[in-house]
Amino acid sequence: MDLDDRQKKLAIGGIVLLLIATVLTLYFVFFPPTPSEEASQPTFGETSGSREGLQEDRENDRAGNTGVFSSTARLRLLSEEPVAGATTLSIDRVGDAESQEVVRYNERATAHAFDVELEDLEKERISNTTIPRIYESLWTNDGTRVILRYLDDDNQTITTYSAGLVEEEEQTEGKTPYRLEGNFLSNNIMSLVVSPDTSEIFWITKTLQESQGTISNPDGSNSRVLFTSPFTEWLPQWYIAGALALTTKASGYVDGFSYSMPLSTGELNRTLGDVTGLTTLTSPSGQYVLYSKGTTRTLSTHLLNTETDVSSELSISTLPEKCVWESDDVLYCGVPGTLSSGVYPDIWYQGKILFNDNLYAISPETGRATFLYSPENQDEEIIDVYKPLVSESGEYLIFNNKHDMSLWAFTINQREELNLPSPDEVLGL
Image (cartoon, rainbow, N blue to C red):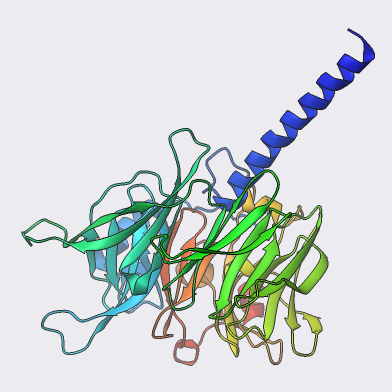
């Protein structure tokens, strides 16, 4: 074999390995797995994501409606089964004088849809249409339609199914009131987000040469291409009706960039750049951007005021994916009690570490982080906050626990009533 042939084969082999690495990276970024027993455990403290006797304690608490199963508890367990996505809405129940606020969600294993009332924790299965192994669900049209995302049987194709809740004609005992009916969107949609009023979606597909961003109705109709870009690795956030934020996918090994994009023009306006391991969360008006800087050793969290272009580092260290804006005046975050050394955010995305979080409220005006609650200290629960959202009423913080993808609710405004410990007491300082 001459030298030219050998070089050609090496080049081809290198390209194949690069493609394989790209596919694996996309899988972990877009479908962050719940860590298996083989995944590395957290290295901070003695926390491992579980505690001895947890199942037995939960069975006793469940039977007595105590602990996190109590409707009067500040931290409540809504679903022990892994959940793919949730929303909140108000529902008028027959015989009730006032509407009830419920969390509507899909089980990850089956896509079955449930409503659980936040006040009394009563649960109802509203659809038993089965679609196995859902990784993500996004509720649209005020909770009447859902977009289900999962890997096809080939474990490579990302399938996106948009379905509406169709009322069953006959309401009989033991039968769910709705079924899911819908249609498939394009294969291999890499990212998909819902508009603030839940009436539209924005999704990104890509070819070998470019990425394409499309806006449409949740069922895929009335679609229009908003932008094309030679760069293909984008994570979008639809933070206000007239604009999106687009951030490059993060790694602690490379610099990241973030842009705002008005829907009227589709032009990218740089917000942040040259930040290693950059992940972002833009406030509802766009005035503030919460962002983290990850490196090969640690993680820091910052807040950018886009009006003054001034950025400041916060006293807490967390990832924006663990936070949610209630308004431009406050955001809520799950904050790890301790951070182990490692490449951020890569090791958290890949499930190599999990966190033991406390809950904080952050004022963007002052930059002050106020301690709210310690699940471990108050309830002996180890929680890694993931996909948080504020309920429609603003009274509850809803989130997954990344340890097992269970679904939780936290009552926000009870600090003074419960006389909770200070952050120093929680951390044993």
